[in-house]
Image 1 (tube, helix red, strand yellow):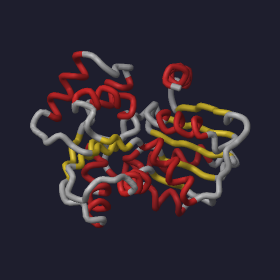
Image 2 (cartoon, rainbow, N blue to C red):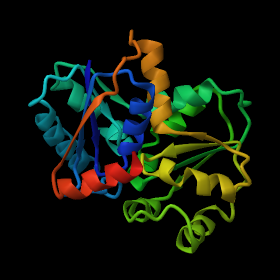
Image 3 (cartoon, rainbow, N blue to C red):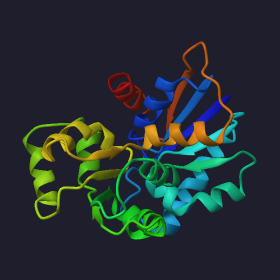
Image 4 (cartoon, rainbow, N blue to C red):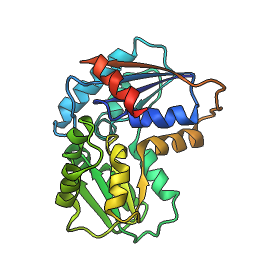
Length: 245
């Protein structure tokens, strides 16, 4: 099988890393819209337009499935994308919710959703969790982490100050939904800040769990052939991939 992975920038490489680790596909086509990253601060109509333009790119490849690794795209553009596609398009929100539901957490345990402004404003995570009976949910717009990760800042004083800015007044969560594909790159720092107490819900591992649950996939003998494309500075994105993967 050949799969496509779409993200607004480099963050979706964290999903690619999980796909490569589990080795369920023969080929992975990655496209990062690096010319227009980040999507998080943009309005709904712009997000949908950008996402449909990305879909046109993937129509150049004979893919079997497309994952929108970007949580913001998953929150706003999936219906429009699926309406114009002849292959399934999956987001990462449903899989993240499923991963939390499959954990051993109580319905009243504190859960933190950290994501970009657009994803938080969509309410997709909160509504899905509340429908499942979760009662202690904190949603935080944490968009400042995105440029830090894009700059390769995964630890240190600047990241620590940003975490203190966002988290100083909240209860230590039992689980953190990493509602942006950039955030797994700072997962170790997040765990250190919260004394290694929370469960981290990682989009990449969650989507693999979702794929294994709902699709008839077999582990491949060879590692997937990864091809990386970008709307701007593809060499820079491939350099990041070499480092992150």
